[in-house]
Image (tube, rainbow, N blue to C red; front, side, top):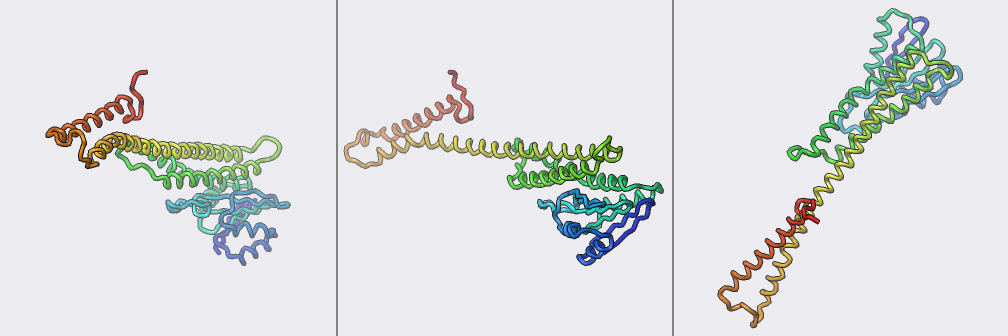
Length: 307
């Protein structure tokens, strides 16, 4: 366990990285934590939450993991948890891995030389966790634009349904985390009176990121619908061609079948011009059906025949 203490009167901030169960239990006993806090700290995929515990408050936030692999599609794979316990002028943060967002807040507060308060620290940590979602949301937007462009570009490889669904899954999880974070921010704001400038800024930030995620999720759902519609349209085109070919060869097969019966008495069997005449008849029938299909517009998918 790595333990860092940031002293900034009137506040003491203890940051704990990668504690074991025994170390968490020792911290809980030392600072009078409820057992539920230890359980929540150990749960890797816990969503953001706010909980009032007597004279103390327990908050869980999540930071997007920029090192997550492309196939990551769960809360634990995409994000890292930060547990925050604060009481009076004491703040404790617990996280499993080193987080650059938390380190930057520590460095900024330590170098500012200005005494900071509990609301200022909580606002800084919340803003840092929110800022971690800017890059993945931007990448999702870029990927979505590329997918939309490739759907109607015949020279480009269209995205697979799995790729589009994975994008939807990631955006949906991000939106869910941001929505829960917005609830946490709302509960951190004072119940009466106007909100402080610090929390008002945090509220505006989380609302902006949540709106961005909502918009992306709506566009991804639309992309999936368009993807399925384009696939159905291509299938219809193939079926239209196959149906046309079947319709053309049906009368030809009938003619060949009749003259393949090998009856002794059949018209034109001994006529020297019978063979080319039958071939000409078959060609005329096929060309006539094809011309009729084109006149009806069935081979192009739209009717062109005047009513």
